[in-house]
Amino acid sequence: MTELPRVGPLLHIVLYEPEKAGNVGNVARTCAVLGAELHLIRPFGFHLHDREFRRAVMDYLEGVRLHEHANWTAFQGTLAPGARVWAFSTHAATLHTRAGFRRGDFLLFGPESRGLPGWLREGLPTLKLPQPGGGRSLNLAVAAGAAAFEAGRQIEGW
Image (cartoon, rainbow, N blue to C red; front, side, top):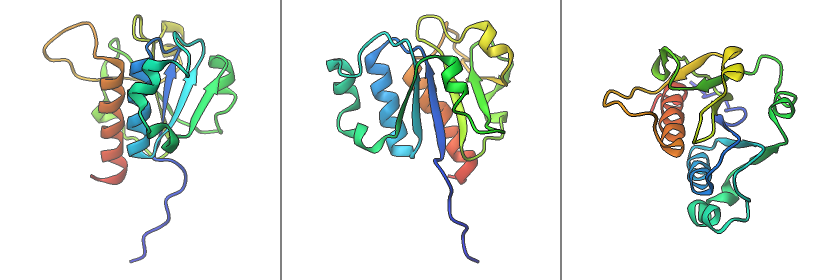
């Protein structure tokens, strides 16, 4: 049986108002190894030429399709009809393993210090990562990586 060609990126990882250069650099590396596209929604708490960002991303940035958006509205304007955006939050009731991810889905994460605002979560399906040991939240890069690899597992059957 002939395998159908894969169309488009595996995933899109979206960081809403990210604050820490090192986290964004690490998420960019995850995107590079997964074949995911990275979307950054302004404002950022750093500059893309920041030394910490360059150190975290290393030479992986060349393998990442990076999109910058002026704000949430500008990002929404780039979405194709039917695009699926999954918001990640510690306030969600549904585990990420129950999502049923599909190729081309968008995984949305909020800023490190406060997460996604309630007004943004309200209009989107919202997922959480399990935290059986407690704590306020996972590190942004760890959360994005865990969610992206689960999505990849569901999509590609790893």
